[in-house]
Length: 334
Image 1 (cartoon, rainbow, N blue to C red):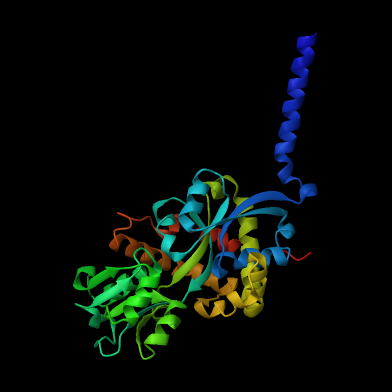
Image 2: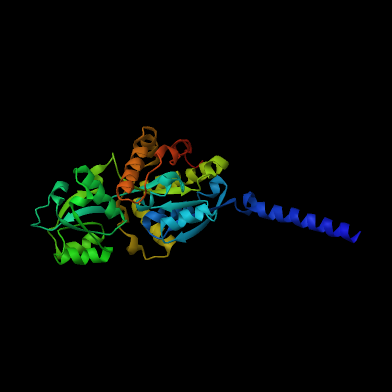
């Protein structure tokens, strides 16, 4: 009898444990729990900051568990071990979805801070003039990406220039001291360079390639989650779309909301929207449906192959969940 009672108690305990484990799906506990990674800068956290401020999660019956990371690859690793449901990647980490490590659920913002700059008197005014020149670049960054893109557009190979890998702060010093002819770097670091070389030449800008190509940052999910739980992914995507549209309508205020979220002084993020292009969800949907967004990812993946970052790449249609994004709509009003 005691054994039967013990067995019954054990079974009851298991049932209670199961109920507790499923508690995150109960609206009485605040909604279904969703773990979401982010990076503590403007682009990496603005949408999540706005979603929290505007109470967008609860409108989809979700309860976010937000986790801060220092970079995108660590988030993809966490997605792979099921410690994260969703995460954020900058353009420099887009080789990970292109090799099947994650699925993209939404484009966030388009980076427009990257430039190839040249010293005055270097004879460099266009990408073709880079041939034979010494160029400072932080390896593996968006600066490296814009350099490879510009070289390709000019019909040059990486071997046609002298690339000098440096960390970003060293690039600032090297350019200012006339140690290199050009640099592939980004704002606001270029503002620092201009203090020493005010008449520098901006040879190539990120927006020169838009809309054919751009440097998007994105939100991603586990490779199989959309097929296993498409409704969850749709709801999260709807939250991201609504947050994005609020940011588009309130760019300056979004900087303040994000600063509050990150517990930073407002001045530290003031002007952040100068370095990104914000697109309303309706426009992103159109660009998704006409194939433009897939083209962005395919072209960037080709650059990663050119950079020897990856040996080959998947097609964007296999890792960008464009149909799901287009169908997610917005967060329903209460």
